[in-house]
Amino acid sequence: MTSKRSSQIVYNSGFINRLIELPASHHPYHAPNLTLSKGWKPFKLELKGSKLFFYKPPGDRAAAVRDLFPVDLVSALEEDDDEREKEVEWTEEQELLSPRKVNEEGAGIHARKKRAYWGRGTHPELVRGLAGVEKGTFEALVHESVFATTFSKATAGDASEEAEADQDQYLVQWRDFASAILLSLPTLVGPTKFENEFTRCCAYLVSGAGEDTKGNVLARVMWLAGEYVRGHGGLAVDHRR
Image (cartoon, rainbow, N blue to C red):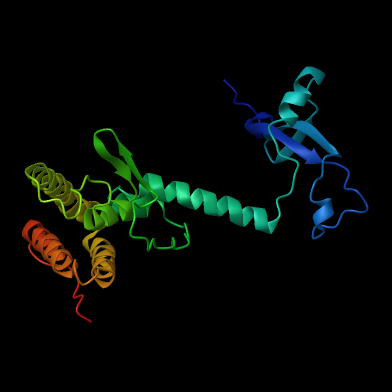
């Protein structure tokens, strides 16, 4: 049995949209000429041996092949916007994965650092449902564990038994949530990254507290720090400097 000659073997095949005619007035750096809608021709390619063959597809398939390829150039500004949108999507989807998996899937991605949230209200990336906090980015979950903005609080100055019961229920809900965050997130995102964001939120909470609430705020931060050390045996980074 004789084998095929190398020149008859199809090593690869596919489709392209080839720019046959480039307008004489086109300049790649002129914004008005960023759209090149004319001069494109669809082809089927076959690589046989060392030769590349171009075949014109049938008329009923030419439009379908042409639709597979964009014919517009994207300005640098639009590219930056697209990359920024992809970066946010990647962060939200990957943030709670293990550091090893993030490094593997995110290798080569030079993501811009997200702007830190400095508000004292509910973090904009925290999602809350009827049952409580449902999900959120890493920063949003850390922020909520420190500031506890979405839990029901008793009315200030109300000393009734019902108000005290509401306050106790609030503390139980918040501590359950904060304990879960302090225990699980450092393992998922890395202790150093977690501690940096955690200490930033705690410092901001204390610095913005009024004189009448400073004692309660310090007690909250001390409880959070003790809960973290209890779950992980100590700190990964010296934050005293």
